[in-house]
Length: 369
Image 1 (cartoon, rainbow, N blue to C red):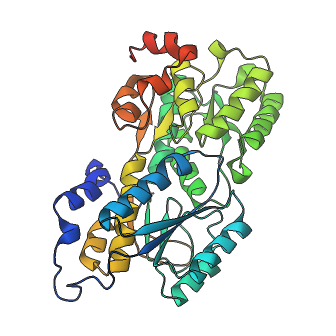
Image 2: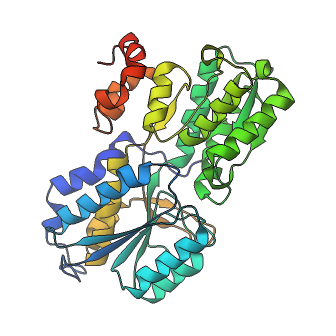
Image 3: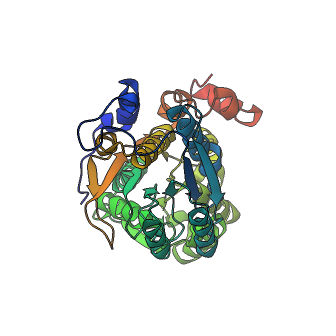
């Protein structure tokens, strides 16, 4: 079970703190003044490029927020490991050598990166785990409520099947085993799926690869039969795209696809939801996560302990460390019914981005104009 029930207000906490002027306020005894000026460098290490969110949303938001919080004196250094733990180790070493002031780390391999986290600690560089819970002596963690993500996926899949019974067979395509979030997504999904449907086949997917997900789905179809699959749990949107290719290659028409889940609200997934190929995604409000991470990083390196504590009221455990200060942001099930109220309202995509000529008729059918 999750250790915390996260209220909706959590997703707006970081904005309200900034809005009340807390960044510029004097703090009480023990941390009355920042230990460093606004002239700081925040290192940002992202894990892979298959998921477009990191370069399109997370990093630009973090960069903008750091500049805003430091009166345009602070800067960010960015690196993406392209799903290689070795590359990320080298990138983190470079940031340590450059003596950045704080590192936001989204780990490729949460276990393999632990020695580098220790090195950063020895160099007096705070490390805040971002999106994925890295092992080692991290100073904080900013992410989404990952078990809730899986619960939302599992619950929505059961609802999409309709009158679900244990005789209904589903295929479960999980994420990368080196990503600690994968286990949390899976645990949350199983809370909703076990006892309600039969998980006929389950697969892990190295590096969250859509191609590997497609190959796994092809194996599942051969074993179960294309007409005997009531639904597919896909841990994210990129893999859902590969899963759909496997089903179509097996002769399943777009109109006969079983309900398929996803996560990340990538633009192609949003368009597939509109067209009916993919049933749902999990919308994770990236601005809330990225801005909270930037605020936590700046507060930590400047010694604003009261603000850092206010931002990280939750607590999580990793395999190596307990009671880690954390900020966990809530999530939303994205379906045809709420595209306008979520990704459009939050400025992630415009209607024009989504409703290209290929999808215009489908957009019109659901009133997305």
